[in-house]
Length: 611
Ligand code: M6R
Image (tube, rainbow, N blue to C red; front, side, top):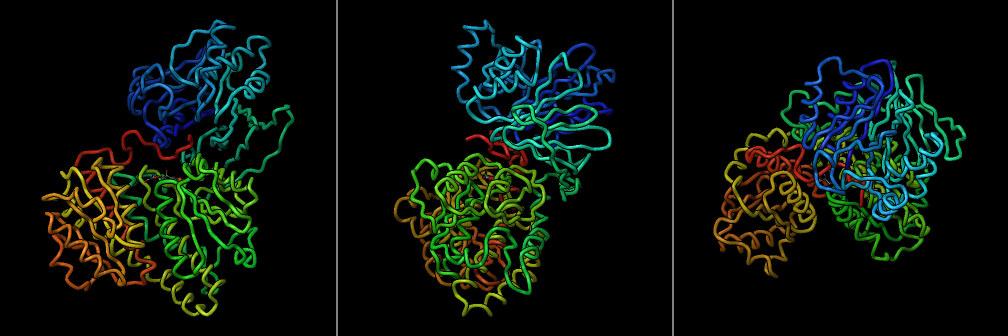
């Protein structure tokens, strides 16, 4: 949700900023802009739409347009529609800034700034208000640090700012609250960025900027201060993601590359959490005794991560027999949730920066609950703030549609469930050992077999690409999978799609089924298989065209369906890992066939850092 980059060093900042924005574009692509120190002023170049539009303007400026310091921004519009004038950077004649976040009291501040300081505003953005507010202080003493620290307490909401002042060439000021920002360094200079992939091509050495800290970045170093201007010493961290992982390579889209990476991701995530043949969360701050003492687990997450939590619930309840609630973060936090000290609140997040999930984590902590995070991005806000953290090993996920991160989250759910089963059902220890072995040795191999079916799935997708509405149905764990399949399809192909618990159809939804309506039915388990066949017959009788995802040898599969996709046999609790690539590939191919922008679907951004 908006991406920020900044550089000060001995290389050409224009190239570095453009490159960084390219890597950050998945955080928003409504507009792009940069501001660089050029000759004796700050030169801003910005344009609505994808980065390409801004790049064209820079190219027209020719090779003399160089600088050693600047800031850049890629926007996901919140306040004010996508337009040139609403594009970042924003500023005054003294300063220019880029912003990720939302200033909630911007209207009130704007009125004051107009009335008392006689500012004129060009854009509809909250960001321009923040720029002018800082400027109003700066005008009185010309001290950037003081101006920033005077303005910040007046801002309500979330922000990560990169700020440059005309009178301080080569210097970037950076600060954050509830929006991510890192600082990084290489042999040529110093960076600020919304996340690590933005700089990964150049460096994997970085510092995390904590809430309220201010970084002062120049070509000769980065200094960190608290709001009282007291220096802070920080440790450099090293990201273990290599830059190839954030590159498309020979694949036409990041999404396809990331789908194909799943066998490796599953293997990596599981093997990092197995010890002596048994599940091992490998987390600090949570002993087995403590884990066993929780009477209820509450999973809280958004979107795909929430769907992974639904799979987790099904497996934990079936193996460990302890109750699990799954909650949508944005709903949970405002519903005055009932939380007990013996609840374990587990937040799941790829980015570790999702605003609603982070807010629930803080709420749970404030209510005295122990918190546990399942996170992909090391050093992210959620990873830093949770009491204990279990890392998924998906590596950087660039496509907006989550694929390999989901699989890694489901792996984490499996390990978590197996661990709880060990603690709560010790008589299952040998069974848990067998499950762990299967997860580690066979499942990656089966996932690989499925992703290699891409051509077959593409062939099926061709017949369904023009659908207006499409339904996913399943029961139990397959209903959780249906939710994910449906989200994937609508997110990237814009085909309207809904997921229904198959048994619920007769209670309303079946009225939507007419001649030719596509229905994707998922039946990976035995217990409800016959019930699913009945539900499929019901929709078939009303004209549905059925794609059936089920296990090899499933009785009557081909008689009832129009197309069948078979999955290898494995334990039912692991079936989501094998079935989900089918739905990801289906969504991917439908999206490509419809000519959609697969990696950057309209209106979306990868990291939702605003509420
Ligand atoms: O970074 P997070 O896992 O917290 O993100 C949560 C959702 O925004 C995310 O899973 C979203 O639903 C996916 N992009 C959908 O593919």
